[in-house]
Every structure is written in structure tokens, then in C-alpha cells.
Image (cartoon, helix red, strand yellow):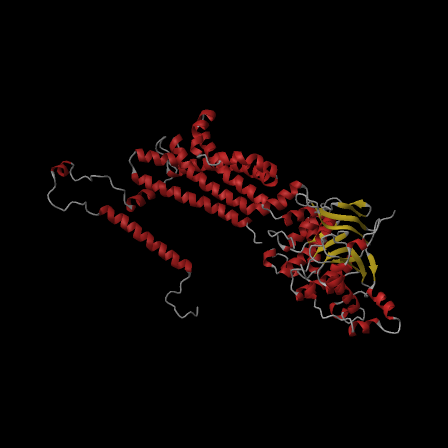
Length: 285
Length: 315
């Protein structure tokens, strides 16, 4: 603390937080202020049309932050109410979405990681499977939806399938990449200690490739959370995606903005969990 | 026919040449024997195939020709009876020092209880002076400490044959000296057979019972097996004062600087199985000089070449 300038002696974190708060206040202030700004009329006589519509706005306005905060308070103070198919709490809707995302995601992981191991360890498997992966990977997950609905004949399972198909590729490719890139020296350590192939896979290859695999899993959960909203808008019924679309149909923009915010927060939390796990398996060479 | 502890007979390594070109022969007609409990160093310039010989003994590489037999059994593939210390340490970076040693001990004795594995591992870590840092990951250890962990891991599994691939090559001179002492200490306990690659002539004299000298590649040979009959236990500080030290040292340096390149491989290849010529520089010199002159005086007066260990480190 013996710097000469004591005025700005805060740590970087403190300064960053301050700046973020300032930006938030300015942003919300502008949003709020512009909403209540007087309409563009010069303040003169009302035209006949204006008199007819009795001062109502010509165009609907985006609701101001204050309204959204009030709505958020209402919704979050009772997130799990269930008043029929079209009126469920935000917690229930998010719960449905999370369930679908996690079901599809773990299903994908259960297949992608072993297959990725196989591809990473065997150049033959890599060459044989690579063309299929390259063709299937760029397909938009939603393009699978009609086929999934036709074959599975269940909207719930189809949504899970769409999550499965979109989250499998980053995990598969990263696992294969990580396994193929395990240092020869480490494998040699396993060989000179007469480890069986299974033990080598679990004790050497898996921990060595774990950081790369976790990177793939982190990308996948991000994509899965992006896709679930769109998928639920299509299949309907429940879930946060359906909720957004339903509120749009109700012309309840306040709820739409609130749920957009919630989607962002849940997505961030999912990423935080994965990055915490990634930190646990990361090692320094 | 009775075998030595380790027999390597007429080993060769060739790489296929390009179109129409002959194969590239790194070395051929390499035969040697290792006796049980012997410490053997192998010296040669880069590219003569030392590492290939070592990796083949470890079971990680294969000769193009020739056989390796250990205790009457052919070596094909890696095994726990042969321990390896690599130049780049090869520690698993996600495990702590203790866990790295435990990894080896656990692989060696699968039926031991956890406590016993830990106790045995700690004993060897203590022997290399790492008792205080057993919970650190390799990234948190210095190069010298990492190599000590690696040595502890190799010795803790009590292999019958230890293969050391230039274990001190990446270390500074001071650290190297300290770990050489530790290596001698830990080796004196169990007297395992050790086969070690080095580029450092002084290190080889300090450690070895015999030093194999390789001619330059391609088409390298193990030309000579130099006996080091300096008394044990040897110490870094005292060994240079021994009257035979410089005789041996000069002989080795002379080989590396001039003879390794000039040697005609055809002269070395006679029909049938040939082991490297056994050489004892001290005896040879005594014979050449006659009995009236002490070999040590001669060595320090006349044949001392201006040479530092650095110059032999071509790797």
C-alpha cells in the first residue's frame, strides 16, 4: 500500500464492479427515462384521430425496467404455483426445461465420451467415422424435430432427442481430440508399469484428457440451453421456451422480458457449474 | 549355453530408405552382456542409437534385428521387472509426488493395502530428500525435484533392471551432482542392475562399473567396454583425486573426440557374435609405459587434454 497515488488504490475487481454498476444504472435509467418521455407531438392541439383514441399510445412500448422488476418480484416470490396448463410458475417452467436439457445432455455424454475414446485411440475408427460426423454435425438440431416427432411420436421425448443430438458433437470431438493428444510419455509410463488397457484408459488417458473433455461438455451445455428454448417453442406445452412464446401470444411483454432474463441467468449458472468441475480436473504441466 | 543376466545379441535398427535408396542403418551388430548388480553407462554421440537400445530394453521400441534376453526369457514388450527413468521425468502432472510414486508401487504390488503402499512410497521419497514436498504436484516442483520423484518411483518398484535415459540431462551442474549422490545412495541399498545413458564423462566414471562406448552413427557399433575399477563407495569430491581418474577420463574423452568418428566399422565386424572389446585404460597404460613410471603422474603431466565436461554434451 505504499503507492504514491492513493486515490485509485482499489483492486481491479472493485473497480470492475463499480464500472458494471454504473453501466447498469445508466442503461436502466435510459430505458426507463425514454419510456416515459413525452410523445413526439409538439404539445399543440390534439388531432381528431388522437382525440378518438383518447390518448392511447400509437405504438405499444417496451415495458420499462421498473415494471419488469415488479413482475420479477411477483413471479419469484411464488415460482412453483400451478394454475392449469397455461398458467404455471416460472420455477416449474424452468424445471421442465432443465429436466429436458439434462436428460438429453447426459444421454449424449454417455454415448459421446466412450465413442470419443474409441475414435481418439484408434486411427481406424477415426477415419471410418469422421465422414459421418462431419455430415451430421452441421445439421441444425431443430431440423431433426419433424423426423423425431414422426419416429418417437412423443413431443417430450422429441425435445430430449433434439438436445441429445445437438450436445453430442462437441463432447464427441473434444473427447476424441483430448484422447488422441495424450502425451506418449504418459502412455509409456502406463506401459512400463504393465497397466491393462482398461486401467490405462481410466488411470492415465482419462485424467490426461479430462480438461479437453470438460471443455467439450461446457460447449455442449451452452448449446443445449440455447436449443431448448427454440425446441420448446415448437413442441409447446411446458418449459421456458413455451412460456416465452405463450406470453408473446398474451402480448405480455413484461413477462417475455422477465423470462429472457431468467434464461440468461440459468444458462450462466449451468456454465458456472461446468467450469467449476473443469477447474477440478485441470492440471498444470 | 549359459546366458548373462541380460544378453543383447546382434541387435540392429534400420529405417526404410526412400524410393530406390538403401535402408538407413542406425546401428548394427550390437551385442553386449550385463551382469547382475552391475552399473553400466553407455556413451556416444547423438544419433548413434543409444536411446533406441534403451527403449528396446524397456520394451517400448523394437530392434529391426537381434534378440534381447533377460534371465533366460526374451524381452518383448514392457514389464515391471524393468524400470525406466526418462529424461523428461514423465511424471503424471495431475498426481502429487506421493501419488506418482504410489502409482508405481500400486502397479507392482496389487494386493498390498493402501497404508502399506503409502508407507513404502514415502520411504523412497524420503531417500531422495523429498519428505517435505510429497503433496506437491510436479508443476510445483523444480526440475531436480521432479527427477528425484521419477527416480523414487523407479526404485520403489524394485525392478531387476533399471534403465535410466539421460536422467540428469536437463539439470544444472549443481543439482546434477546432488542427485548423482542420491542415486548412488539409493542404488547401494538394493544393488539393482542399472543401464544408463549419459553424455557426461565424469558422471559415467563416478557411477559406472563399466562404460560402453559407441561409435558415431549411422551404422554405429558398441566398440569398447571400459572397466572402471575405482574403489567404491565413490564420492564426487574425492574421485578426482584418485590417481587413475584422469587416465580413465582422458581415455574416454579421446574416444569421444577423435576415435568415435574415425573408427572403421568394418574392423569391428568380424564373423559371428562379437562382444565389445573389454578395455582397462589403467592397465593398458601401465603396460605401455613400463613399470618404472607411475601411470597417474604420466596422466596428469602429459596427456591431460584441455577439456571440460560441457564439450561432451552433444545431446
